[in-house]
Image 1 (cartoon, rainbow, N blue to C red):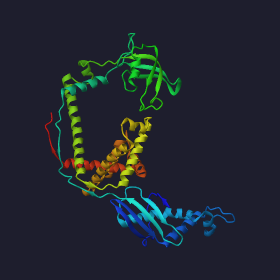
Image 2 (image 1 turned 60 degrees about the horizontal axis):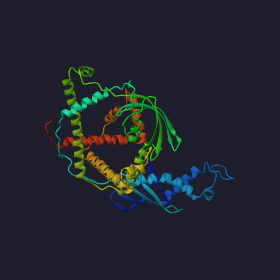
Image 3 (image 1 turned 180 degrees about the horizontal axis):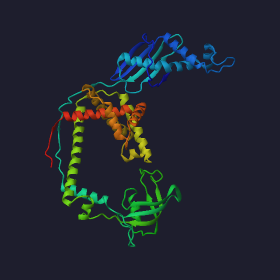
Image 4 (image 1 turned 90 degrees about the horizontal axis):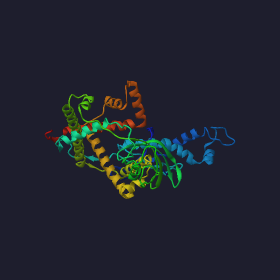
Length: 453
């Protein structure tokens, strides 16, 4: 029989006589054939019987007083074997890991090859260990910095964005119809083939004419409509539209226009500059230029870090286990499917929209997974080589930054314990360690600097 059982906490005892043989080996994927002495097996079967017989109900016997032969005849030996495996497997697994000096990275697979009376228990345990990493050069990586410049057009665009932030939307007083870029407030009812949809009534919906929220025909159908007027719109929605009850259908909107608003942006004048706490337009433009340069510098540092890591990873060799890669591909496919469901669409629609086949999607995900896994293991190997570790205070500082508002030390300790119990603390620690390794590689790189203006 074959079962999948996650490794539990170790409980090794009396397994010195256990025989372990490597049955096959392919990269980081290992298979072990393990033989547990019959005496140890019988000991665990007896313990399993003593536990289960306490609640066993057999006519003519009190609880806990049923003889083992009668218990096995009534309930079957498989019940005892299943209970015994719950204790034996974690001990056997841990012994294999310790004896073979392994570092498993995914859930192992257990297959019971033999479990018979008065015979040794024979198990096959398939597991995947950390792949071997052969690091290439990772110090003194040569990267070129791009010249950082700030143009007048960029400053002008930033000024325009400031204007947008301070725009207001007063109601249109003149009696005119809807125009391009107007903001409108609508009430509507939505029908499909004459039937009102479940979520088909909307009040005070605000919409900008020309927005991509709806197909272009929706905005076009509102042009010229005046406040208080009604209009019927027949709108064809694409197959990949996020709202499922609209996707691929011709939907009828019975619309009432309640209000038209027109966006007005303030002029860039003395009043505008003063409201932003600047003495002059010149000082405002200077401030914008400095901020743009600072942002670009941060982007460039991140790009240089990424390029350094990419070169380090490309120069290293990692023998990724196929089962690990395929498992991660399945995981990412499921995550993508769930995200699409939250947006009220489907993986099938996504594949059509991206013009992919199922096979091409898997290949795309596989390429991403292989790149991410190789990067992870290379960074981990460098951390071990350079003895880069994450201190407790660094973890606590990160947790404080993640929690909004003022927090006490006891709150951070409580949060840390909670994350440790769920396994998320290990993930956070790994992320912090990788950040430190990337920072180490960046500062070890030979960067050809450019003049900044």
